[in-house]
Length: 163
Image (cartoon, rainbow, N blue to C red; front, side):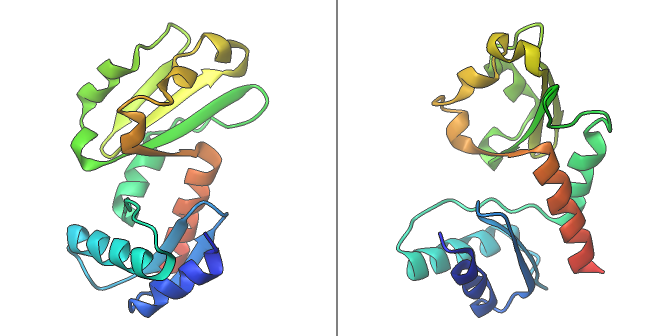
């Protein structure tokens, strides 16, 4: 998806301060609209109109991103030694019990924060982790994953747009 064109789609909806981040559909914007379900429907319809794609949109506001980022231990990174991913959940899977569906191994550390799972492993344990085994599951189809570095950057961009 062309991010410049996607930015234009969001601007055509009346959103302001539209910013894109990396080529994976991350869009930050301002709006006075408060009803998240209506926003999602509006954005999904615009993407279908402009790109011919019927995709689900997942929105997170500044407050929810702040909660997720605050829950991530500062030492958790995404680098050669460790991997930390944030799995943003669609509403139908957003509850602490979702962790029970993961078949976690002793090397996996998973935290729940409203709207997200935060999954951390040491890279030396990656092959033993349940993380790779989640791909293709029903749960996997109801989330979107960003590494911790991207998540933190998106939160910083969101703060800058709001100020």
